[in-house]
Length: 191
Image (cartoon, rainbow, N blue to C red; front, side):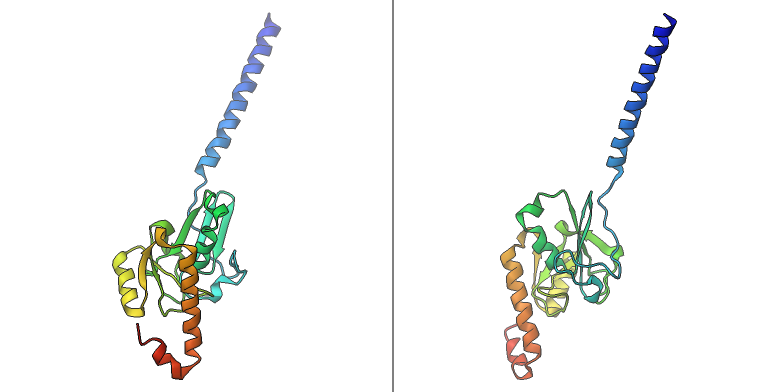
């Protein structure tokens, strides 16, 4: 009987230990957050492979449990996110708040939720390749930038692939206008 008692106690202790370890594993997973991370000097854009710090303007990032994807611009991040397979990911999207940051060197202390940001599209500001979408946490700051540099203010839900392509072609056309001084004044006459 004594032997049976000891085997029973051991079995219960092993079961309790196993359950305890399983519970510890669950707690670790719950503790993992999807907070934004800092950009580093040698980070490369997940889409184009360019060194992110080589470009001015707001950047984007998608934070998942498995890691972080960083982008050289908000447009690159949005273009990636709008792909159907990426929308299925459990990722949190972040962009720089340009109302609190400098255009040439965005401050990682001001990364905000991309889904609640205000986007200014169609500005004359230069960023990475393609469209430059300025991002803000405050609508008034976004409206002010649009009034000073052209463009219009949109919300996250209003941005789709067609809009990004349109903005990229407008930005590309503006870059060509800079190299043709005689046409430069006429190209912006309607703005």
